Amino acid sequence: MADQTNCPGLLFVWTDIDPLFEADFNKWYDREHVEERIAIRGFVVGTRYISSQAPRKYLGLYRTENLDVFKSADYRQAFEHQTAWSVTNFGRMRNAFRRVCAITAETGIGAGTWLAIIRLGRQATPVDLLTLADLGRTVSNIDGVIATRLLEPDPELSTPLPAEPAENRLLDPILLIEGTSEPAVSNASRLVTEQMGIPAAEIATMQMMWRLQSTEIRRQAA
Image (cartoon, rainbow, N blue to C red):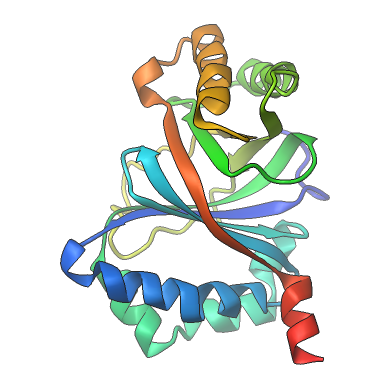
């Protein structure tokens, strides 16, 4: 595992929702939850995605300055004292997947509207992590690929959501590939899965819904 002391952090929340409550779930995310989280000191940007081809329909990514943000008093206050609307929607989630990760390798700048998610699917060795980082650099040269990020989950911080089984959770690394089109991120992902021996069926693709940066909240408050 890489030295994560100065690595940026990323909260990764992937879930399904009962269709009966989907409209309220999206309203909660769009009108309260993302802004509430990005307002916490040390959070940088929050992004929502919707599935194109993925085992879960919705994904929320929240980038932080470093992993220590998730140990801060501000974050603990928000995490341990959820709003009533949050408690309701967390209880409605299905097939939930929460990880707090260090971004241990990344390439590119900016954000693509399409995202591919590749899980290693097994406990990582040091060679696996080096290979994934190298492959991230390789596929960043493919036309249409904007950025790649290698995520290593932190076992202590990656506590499960209410709808996620607490036992036998695999905290495997995740490679994110961002791009300008679904074919671009899918083609890059296939190269990675072939090299890593990961079934191509495990590639998930998602499209960005919207994003919020902490600087926008500060401008609004000024």
